[in-house]
Amino acid sequence: MTSNQLERARALALPQREAMLRRDSSVEQFWTVNRALLVDAWSEWDETEATNAGALNSSLIHKDLRVAVTDAWDDPSKESAVRDLMQEPVEGVFSFQFFDPEKLADLRDYLEQVWDAGIPLRPPYGIVLNRKGAMLDNRSTGCLAAPSFQDFYSLVMDTYMRPISRLLFPEIVGYDTQTFGFSINYQPNTDTSIRPHSDASAVTLNINLNLPDEQFTGSTVDFLDSSTGQGVGLTFEPGTAMIHRGLVPHAAQPITSGERTNFVLWLFGEGGAVPPQWNDSTTASAAERWTVPNAPQDFYAPF
Image 1 (cartoon, helix red, strand yellow):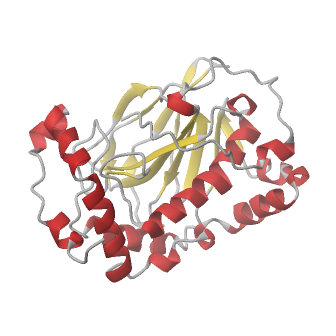
Image 2 (cartoon, rainbow, N blue to C red; image 1 turned 135 degrees about the horizontal axis):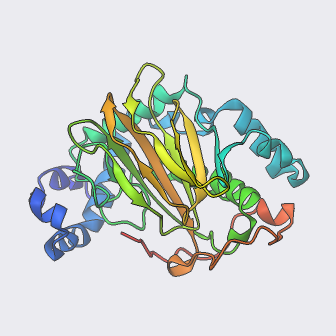
């Protein structure tokens, strides 16, 4: 890596906004051609300009979750303590405190530096391209490739998301070797909502990044409760998470004031494989759940 990669990346002329929204082939070519340059630029930025990279560690995780997960890794027979932290407001949809609200300022400070770094970031498709939308996984072109962030992202996925997913949804074991993620921001004047959809994932983890004083109205996430047939709207509190099977239909209702910023994280198998159906009788031992797969990264990204 040469020392001028950061400035070269900042000098890139981004594709036109309309072309990005249309997903023109020239846009994907831009991200592909410049992939190595952007990775090097993020490494250089991380080394020379990021001032809060050291805060990206397990201390950001809420203490109750961190302790329960650490204990389960040490002794998988204690995993019930992790399950006890989960609420199930809708059948098959679990909510819990993921980040410590009092520590979120450290993560958000780092991310604000990212948004202001001047290095092109590819936003997830289907949004209005606001500054807080970015691809997170290194499978994705134009991702947030800063090494400090990628280490933190791996911690979240490998240490927390995967074993929790296996505990709640046992049929996904073997369909959880690959990862994917993006950030998204909702504002009344840009991205306001997402229509009903399901995800191309085995499991989706949606984590709110709002600080305690960042209030918003609207923007509930609606799920269909299969036991009642009724739609149920769930609201995020700072640092809370919702986790569900990818095939569960859901929608984000319009935000009416404030902003909502989230990480959306997926697990699936090689080549995007997901379980053909859910089967709660599928079994895996506790020891199997608390392991990291040794399958190689396949570089498949759904978008």
